[in-house]
Image 1 (cartoon, rainbow, N blue to C red):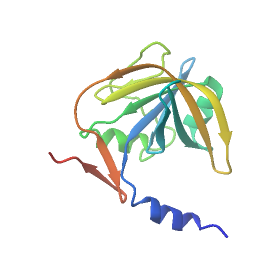
Image 2: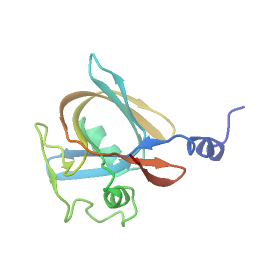
Image 3: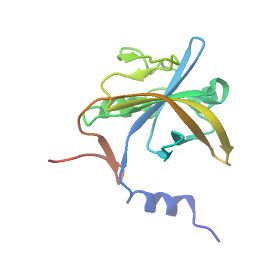
Length: 160
């Protein structure tokens, strides 16, 4: 017998993660969402994995476009994490009044982040409530600074 969803959530609250925003674009449509379910899975070839809930607009757009961007958030970007985590109404454009840029693929990347990755989807693993996407990293760009962290349902920062 496996654990309940609540039991798993309680255990996962003990795991400290970074915070990222996953974005995608197709034609004129852009979507994005906050995640902490993102990892590097291979250096050669350069592969990352991200899990997106099936009902989200971002997952549906990544499914159609087969590209996504990752902005790893800096310690001062809590407001952007909140904005892209669904704490604004679903119909509103999350990109309104924020600065973003594009590298080669055209996916929006959030200005001020610590690192930026552009990825092409190479595998999709559908599950009951979410889909695991494996992306090949096509391009990166990095900045310096401290990351935004998430632990036990709260934002945390590194103290030097």
